[in-house]
Length: 213
Ligand code: MN3
Image (cartoon, rainbow, N blue to C red; front, top):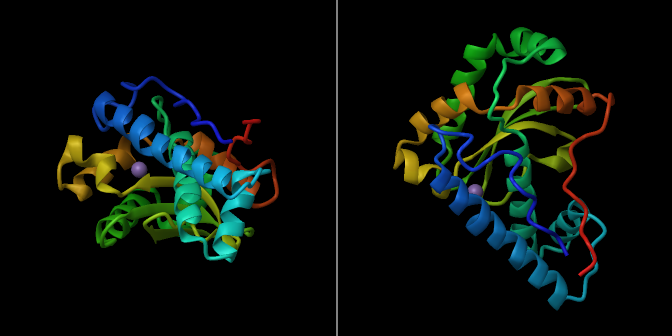
């Protein structure tokens, strides 16, 4: 079974962009709910998982939408928490250089990221990804869909665009939420490690392994 990974910071660490109330609901209720449903589905199907990534790939291949949705949402949220920080610092090194050369700098990246996330109709996610050659791209995904992992991309940061992510703090103002989020919460040190790993230097983030039931 999979455990709900603990938040890597206290619930009030991401204020004022995300309140402690939002993090309690989002982490324990929403993310926890996906993890519970995932475990229930695995148990009912008598599946003993090796990794969450393998569960997602198998569910996608077999078109088991219910299992895919809960497994992918479990992973998307774990990645989301890991890709934020209470102690933000600007991008550095190769990632900073790539943002400058490919995206026109951090303010231009922010504008494009906020625009893409605001334009997504309904629920989903907005990602900054890299391919294996270090080419950056902004991509959006609907519902539980991930960052197009099958296309070989590696996620660097993500923002949750489901209303449960921001409604308590920002009501319907997704653009305002995204703008404030981008200024304060991306973990660029984490993103830099993912960027190096995308190009074969170091280990990519993977979801914590399951434990014996
Ligand atoms: Mn969410």
